[in-house]
Length: 209
Image 1: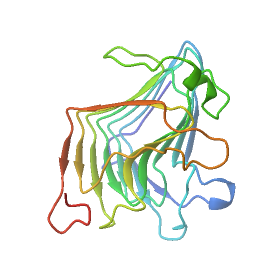
Image 2: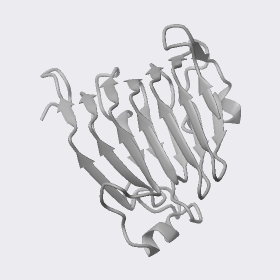
Image 3: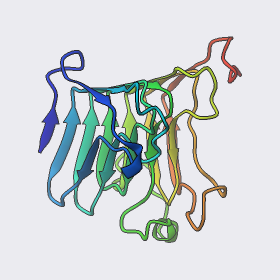
């Protein structure tokens, strides 16, 4: 199943979702044995509902044996974590542009797991070019619109998440990961691979090295 816009200048969705119910614009429930795709859409921040949505403009709920892809979209000044994932099997976020007012991508858990990360920590870490059950984030463009890094980030992870972050271009922002400061019982990200990215900082950026 594919949800495809007519192009990012033609299909534009403005986020005026109420924050009372979470605020998601799209919830994707992946199905085993299928591939789901969201592509060629521009998602824009609204002018009325501008409080932060921490649950994702797009929220993806994975299941074992499912595959999904989010590609060739623009996330333009959303007051939200742009994409939140809850469990991955074969999944990739690629060739998108993120103009950030919040965290672009948050990877929250691992399959199979209890949501806290215990299952992920009980299994060996998965490294290498052909790892499954890992979220691949590749060939994307990220730029920080806020002028500071405290509330934004190219990505974040917790609950035993596993991520490969490669071949991306990042302006005035960084790779993030939750550690032992996660809330409640939730554990940190289990593994991440970061390579072949370009990080660019302008001298005016608070994060200038």
